[in-house]
Image (tube, rainbow, N blue to C red):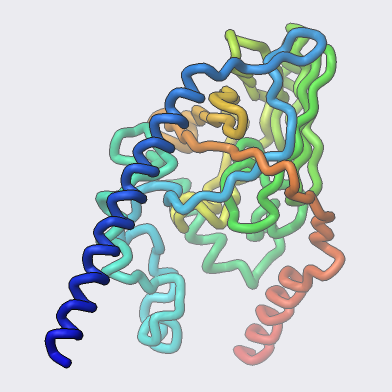
Length: 316
């Protein structure tokens, strides 16, 4: 019986080794084929000659927005044992999780440390708004108020509602955002930006082609928006913007199913230096963009404010 068991174990081990070797060979062949396909791939063109970036794209990724450490979640409830001791408040940070990400990759690729260079005053304003969110509706982000996720924040990953439909016509590129159902129209005809008196939530986009890359320059922001995305670390999510915000996006289709998206963000009143984010957009032809009926069932704002009023009555 013992001999039979040993022989069976040996046979299973040999079969497993053979299967692993076969799989490794297939992976190597697949990788070679993919590399060869990428080398032989030529970007398609629209009827009017633009590089064709049309289609339905998603931005799902497991890469963290920036390199994290324990300071990413400021302790807004320090001294409140009901929030911090149980590890459920904004001040709670998982040490093991933080250590694992400290040396990992991030979507922020510049500065090299993978951290957005935020000025202290902007972090202080973010902290104040988060800790006083029950006091006034102005402390909510434009996303929470269902106004906009902003530009470029509207393309940053969120974990849901992550579809984008890109359409092209002579002289224009249009991007339809699934979340907050925004349609962004980018003219390519060389027209100048709006005058400085005109300020908009999502700025003023002007595009042009550099080879196969769509370059979009955005200016004329108002100072009411923020980099609102739940995929960013807590320190980035509600950071304000000023009218000096300047953004440059680059969309490059690198193969049949991938657009490389890069963006440089510069706001000398908010950040100590420009910073850059890079990530892929993946084509998913069968993905459906559903209605984002934000305020149809959004009770978050009135419920949060009513909780604050109940707190005030209890204090009196």
